[in-house]
Image (cartoon, rainbow, N blue to C red; front, side, top):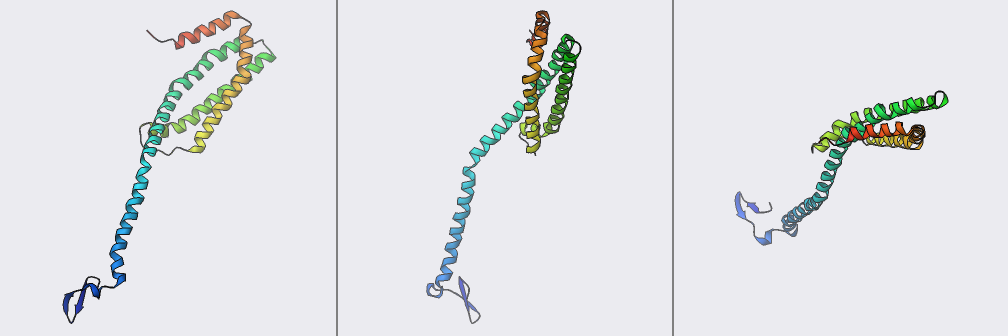
Length: 191
């Protein structure tokens, strides 16, 4: 006997309600139940969509700002240091131990710049993809390496090099003023 029709002596006959057992009646109802479960599961996933869109928008914003940060702020900052600050401090340092100390610091800071640049260049394509709302594999370990490299660089510069640079350049107000004017003119808005 099938669920909906019985076959009797070669003739097809409609099944009467009495001919359908309780197990047979549960099958159509379980189909409705399974359908509800599937719909409810999909709706629960749908409820997460606004949060995912917010995260996607935030990722886009952070990626766009990071591209700008490296293109303008980081690159410009490193160029100013290597083109203006480091040479000014090296020229003003007293020959001997002080000049050697400055030279060692400048070499370390410049090497840091190259390392940070290399780490960024490896990440930049993926960050551009995120900024353009395209799928990207952004290596968490590489991101963390870049962040830590830059923070360590900035900490060393702030704690050791800049105080020494201020002391050396501060001995001659004209040198400090010339450096300040040079940096100001480089970053002044063009009219």
